[in-house]
Amino acid sequence: PSPVEGKIVKLDHEEGDVVKVGEVLAVIEEDVAEKAPIKEPVTEEPAEEELVKEEESASVVGELPISKATAKNEVNGVLAVPTVRRLARSMGIDLSQVKGTGPDGRIMEEDVRSLSTTEKPITSKLRPKFDLYGEVDRIPLKGIRKTIARNMIEAQTTSAQVTVMDVADVTDLVALRETVKERAMSERGVRVTYLPFIIKAVVAALKKYPYLNSELDEETQDILLKKYYNLGIAVATEEGLMVPVIKGADNKDIYALAKELSDLSEHARSRRIDLADLKGGTFTITNYGVFGGTFATPIINPPEAAILGTGRITDQPTVHSGEIVIRKILHLSLTFDHRILDGAEAGSFLSYLIEMLENPALALMES
Image (cartoon, rainbow, N blue to C red; front, side, top):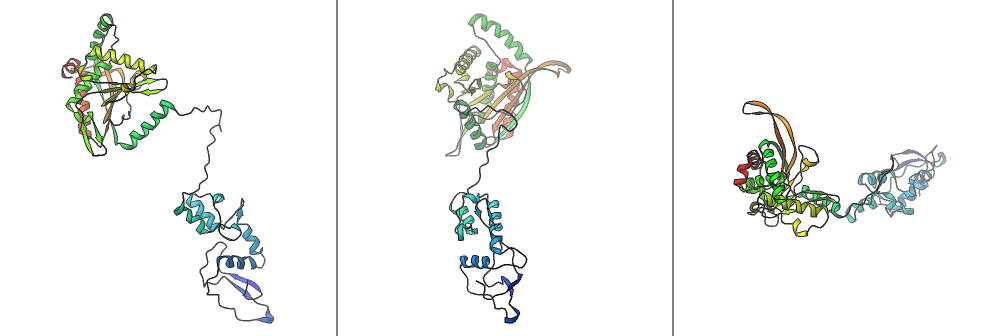
């Protein structure tokens, strides 16, 4: 309660301000007949509830009583002064979910601040209106698609991935494949694509640059250089991307690789593939060029150290033997884990791979 009767002629603070103990709240003008010196502010620290009652009992000439002005602090059923509301907004806290400890359930500053130390802030979750501009089909993320999503995020957040790109003149490889393709189909009933030749070239390059055929042991922080060559081949299926593994690729010839590639791809697309055929890879090849595109930034298949992406083979004018001629050009994208190896080794690997692809007979001998 006010210590005297009269009118408030001066307010030293704005609504919502925090007033320290001992500071002047207001100046009251007493009735002329009972003029008395203005009493010094009470120095004894009042209870929070008493301060609120004092605010509600005073009024300013020409304005609504403070008790009514305070009522304006109640918005959507939440009673809190503007400073508390600003604090809640800055902390991302929904005041409608906060239980006030002040008079009449008023939310105090301490109620808001306590959430940052005692529990996770309560925030309003506003779901976007996906159908705001038209009809939307909702398809659950599940099965293989969900596994792919999880693995891709894990791959990019647990490794330092960098992609280098280059091209290879595969004119001679295209000619060799045409010759082998006819013989393989007529004599063995096997369809030979470019992949078996690329696999042989990759194996030769991996033997020369072993850090691309490795993985990092996270627990011991050791780099494991693998002396076996199990190449994963990305296969697009209706359910999503699968990566069957050709084990011991260095010990198989072009025909054996072509046959195994065909079988694994068919099993993957028909969902009849053995789980063991999806494990144990040391390096992956993804042939996105079959669907279009030249360069890309393929994502490493954990825990491997690298992945090779092959784009379309296109006819391009190229300087060959001092003349500008049309040659068959293959676009290559190599993504590697920069934790395990540096760009120098990755670039050297890619250069050597290009040499093998441009000289396919040499690749068959080296691998």
